[in-house]
Amino acid sequence: MNNFATIITMQRGDMKFAYVQNDNVNYLELFDHFIEDEAHRQLLDPSDKPERFTYCINQNDTKYIFKIDGGVEHRLERQLIAKITGDFYFNLIYKLAKMSQDNCDIAYELYLVAYDQKTKRHYMIFNFIEGRSLTHDDMYTYREQIKHCIETLHRYDLVSNDIHGGNFILTPEGKIKVIDLTNSGFIWLTKANDAIELRDRFNIKIKVPLLAMAFKTFAHSFKRLSRKLRGKKD
Ligand SMILES: Nc1ncnc2c1ncn2[C@@H]1O[C@H](COP(=O)(O)OP(=O)(O)O)[C@@H](O)[C@H]1O
Ligand SMILES: [Mg+2]
Image (tube, protein in one colour):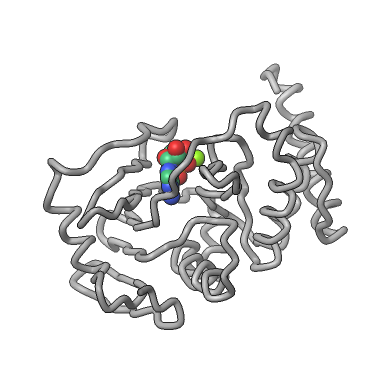
């Protein structure tokens, strides 16, 4: 059983780890197994971002998602914010663990995070969620559940920051779960990105801090104007 109340942290050479304690599954061993055993990992999604890879692995009849994120933030202001707020994925494991402890199952579960200080790559192990991605039409059909999902995320101080059908899974029981949580910047501010996306693309309204909304609405309009002036498409 996963003991989400206990997150083990450790350093091994250049690698920093945080993982959920479990008497039956040692997530550190699972990580090592994945790294060594290239033959048994299945690349799920080549991704539009060259530095990200998502694999599915099957270990003792349990499927896991193994994700590698080699993205390095080059923008100075984002690097500064990351210094203030701490590593996003290491924060994520604690926030999702809190959610799991509360039996709040609107997102994936995160079992392990690793960071290679040399290559600057992050590695994550998630639970595999049976089901399928949402289509654009599904986003309208399941709008109430999507609204609930994002509002709940925000309550746990998490954001999607990339709202589209590919980042939601419809389970065989008809539940919607959100995956692929990212962030760069202050979370209270990024919540407004979710609100704007939901409002403009799917006509879903959620409440977020007024100041964040005003700031992001201004930033979005400014970006659009700047692109127009440079002759780029929206
Ligand atoms: N926990 C999960 N359970 C089941 N499928 C998943 C899970 N995580 C990712 N996937 C599948 O892999 C795809 C890519 O994963 P995602 O985290 O969205 O990566 P990317 O950053 O490349 O968008 C998803 O669209 C989904 O089909
Ligand atoms: Mg995605």
